[in-house]
Amino acid sequence: MIDMVVNSVWLAGLMFAIGTLGVMIHRHPVIIFMCIELMLNAANLALVAFNRHHFSPAWRTMDGQIYAFLIIVIAAAEVAVGLAIIVALFKHRTRVDIDEINFLKR
Amino acid sequence: MDGQLLAWWVLAIVGSLSAVMMVLSRNPVHSVLYLVANFLTLVGIYFLLSAPMMAVVQFVVYAGAIMILFLFVVMFFMSPEARRWLRPEIKSQWVFGTLLTVMMLTVVYISLFTSGRVNQGELEMGRPTIAMAGAAENPREELGHPAGLGVRMFSYHALPFEIAGLLLLAALLGAVLVARDERSEGRQHLAHEFEKAEEAVAEEVQA
Image 1: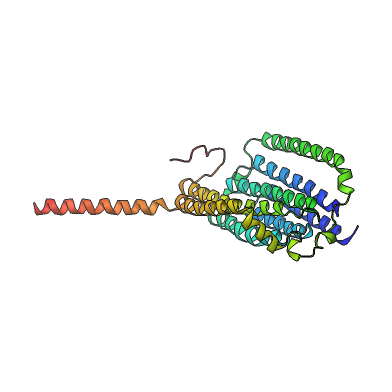
Image 2: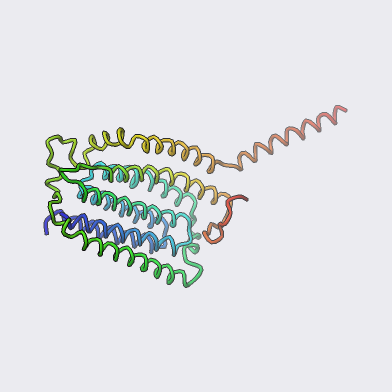
């Protein structure tokens, strides 16, 4: 069973790296935003795996899962605001390119 | 290899492949669907890590609500001829992005490998197995039991919970404020100007 916990942390590292790759090679804000979501989920997976690792009959902790839960709440708020900004950008511009968006005020 | 570990490997391979396909896909709708597939594999992995509550939240909030938002934005605002923006403009962007990612992955894996070796004795000594994690006199004390999570959340973590609620309210207002249609306000403003002009003309005619 320890295998699964350790492997999950390795998988979290891999997923975080894939998200970083997407952020760096893409130019579209929506895709970049999705890659950031992937990185958040990698962090969540690591938290849950570490919680599984540290849980023992002597110390029945669940704080890792609670942190992951709070991260999901924060991510939901972040997605709402971020997608609102992207929608506002789509309304004001015909060309939405992350290289050209360097100011938010018209 | 037991069944749970086998299931973990299947989920992990499918999840990694879908994450890679999300990054490499040229069609943004396909990207969203690959990300949903990745989140669904995470649901299974959370179940295997004895976090059923997290798995359900991941399923409902992430794979359901958040990805629907993404799908809406992609389908409403991305026209098919927008595909050309998906290609990197600078050719070396691929090269440098991949290089930096491989470097970061190497650093993370080296640190994981060394810390794993240091803790190996601790790993093999008396850590609970999956079967043991569920064995408690009080079922509330099992790992990932929703009742235990709730008690902990509303006692020890009450302040972060309240702050998260406040943040959600602020994000709700902020999203409405940012995404509101300013053009309709512009039309209202124009209508107001029009009324004033009409009044002025009416006054001049009377005079």
